[in-house]
Length: 347
Image 1 (spheres, helix red, strand yellow):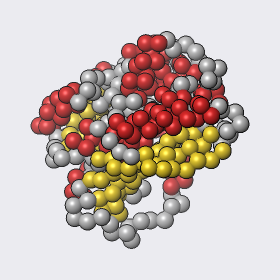
Image 2 (tube, helix red, strand yellow; image 1 turned 180 degrees about the vertical axis):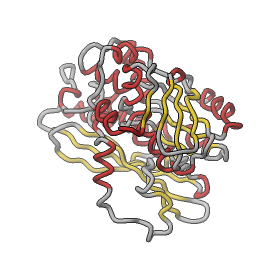
Image 3 (cartoon, helix red, strand yellow; image 1 turned 90 degrees about the vertical axis):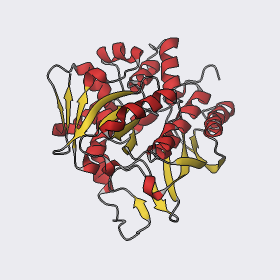
Image 4 (cartoon, helix red, strand yellow; image 1 turned 60 degrees about the vertical axis):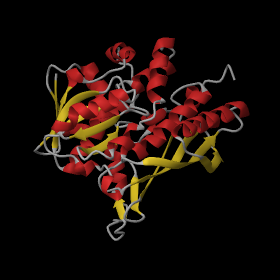
């Protein structure tokens, strides 16, 4: 076990494994339309975090799945991060999780059984913290370690927080600091110290439970969680869903302290370049925004924070709720605005 480095057994890690946004969009074009299912409240059309299906006038089922290859070497920590990330999609729709199933793909002849058991134990521990059963799942023998969850939750049909519900003038609140993918790459390169690893682990294993609380607030119009497409990629999904533009004040972004130096050295996952290329002309940076900060805004976050689009008069109260729930770095980072679905970033 002491000699096992999970990150050396895979070609990518965490949400940095996600297919680039532009490529994914091309793949989804081939899917059939779902408008013929009137109780399907949310499908693929607005790039939301989970599907939502109305069960009755009081309940809608939120369904999602998320899995990836290791972002850290410790098996238990990997299981915790993967499970926290998967459940986050339920919270991002304003839902409350009720059940999870495990997705397990492991190189049985390469990885010791004890390591596999620890990965699964990490996932189970997060489900226990979320107050839900890990009720089963499916496993395969795979060439690289893969772990994640199918997560199910419930939300009132009128309280679903869709990307398309963001409004002109809304304030944007980010719940967790950025830089997770950069720290993960630094760890894989062997240059991340204990303090940096603690920042990575504390951020990625913090459940976004506040999402279920925000669902009850009429002033919270839209939610998404910031993961593999980076802050800018997921904000673009809000913009396109709502047919609005957005403004981001780069100077107000919460950042993981140790990620800054690594970003300035050019350390980070390959997903950063893929994300920046996918944004194209839909993201406009002020000349004063340094390259390293642009990279952090495109950094593939794993189990990142919620991004909330909130009525201006409610913003201070919502931010206070984030802080009260333990999201100490949560900050107001920008606003939605009328216009084409593009993002303007100031220094």
